[in-house]
Structure formats: structure tokens, C-alpha cells
Length: 64
Image (tube, rainbow, N blue to C red; front, side, top):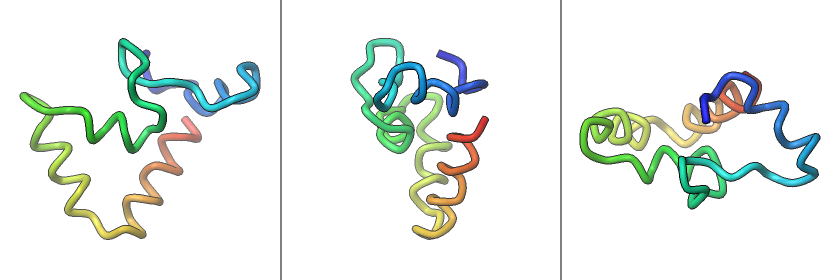
């Protein structure tokens, strides 16, 4: 699903939403890490961020 509104999904579901088209990712971070192919560069850039910056980015996405 698109990321817009992702932060509002937890409340109605009563649990963390599942991510990716098949629900195999249980968190935003896991969803990023599952990407490869054309998105490999983005995944690698994410992994090259400091732990603090990854946490900030995931917080931001979780509030969309």
C-alpha cells in the first residue's frame, strides 16, 4: 500500500500493519530491507545511514 496515511493504520487495526504487497514485512524497516532490484540503491543508502538517522527516517515515514 502507499505510505500516505501509514501512521494512521495502527489505531484502527489495533496492531502494527503488515507491509509490502503480500504482507511479509512486519515493520517499515523490514519492508525497506526486502527491496532489491531497482530499489537496491535506496535500500543500500538506507543501510548506510547512521542508526540514529535510520530511526529518524522511520519515525517520519510512520507519521505520514
